[in-house]
Amino acid sequence: QVQLVESGGGLVQAGGSLRLSCAASGSIFSIRAMGWYRQAPGTQRELVATMTARGSMNYADSVKGRFTISRDNARNTVYLQMNSLQPEDTAVYYCNAEDLLTHWGSRSDYWGQGTQVTVSS
Image 1 (spheres, helix red, strand yellow):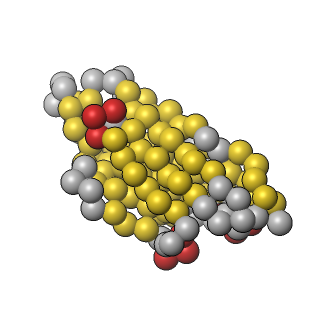
Image 2: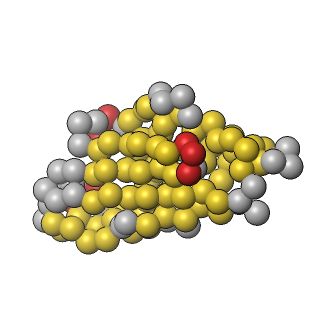
């Protein structure tokens, strides 16, 4: 069974930094892309950043220049370094594994349970 476990959320003052981590475990053969999405109260879940296994990255305009995504393919782990955090970054952050292929041959997308990031002004 595949699981995504996130860590690193918390409370920080505006201008501060946090680093999120997400590790995928299970009988994983490959993951096409891993990334982060976020959802604030009363809003839809939105893309923050994604990274393919080949290193291609995609960022939301609102986080460009402040957030950096990285990935350890050997450990099926993705990170999100968040700098210059602002109150509008407050949300639950979800890890995503896109097009995950298991050793049994099944293929699907997976989500983590979410981690809260709160930025105070």
